[in-house]
Image (cartoon, rainbow, N blue to C red; front, side, top):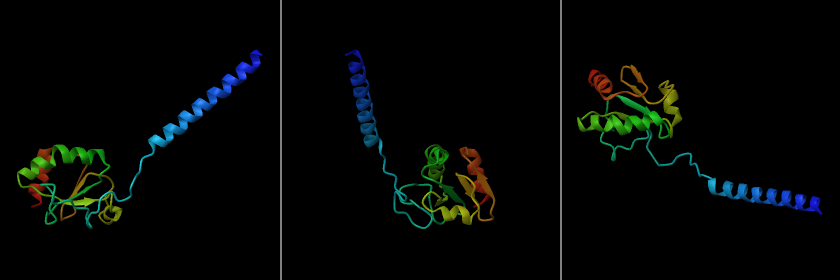
Length: 135
C-alpha cells in the first residue's frame, strides 16, 4: 500500500512539473522579426532624431540591438544634435552588407569620408572633436 502512494506521488509530481514547463514555454515565446522597422538603404530614421542626416560627412554604424549604440544615442548624440552636429545613420542590424562594405568590425563605429574610424562608445567631447575634424 505504501509503495502505491509513493508511485502515485511521483507520477503526480512529474505531471505538475511537466504542465508547469509547458505553460512557461508558451508564455515565454518571443517573436523576433528580422527587419523590425522599414528603413531605407542606410537604415535612416532621420525624421525623429535630431542628430541624423543623410548629408552628414561622418557615417554612424550602429545596430538597434547594440547596448553601446543605445547608450551613445541616449547620452551623447542628442546633445551634439542640439549643437548642430549630424551623422549619417548606417544600421548594420537591418543591413549587414553595410558593415561588410565599409569593413566595420563592431558597433558603434564612426567613419569619416577619408576612411578614418572612431570605434566604440565615445564621450561627447571626443566625438565632437572627431566631427569637427571631418566637417
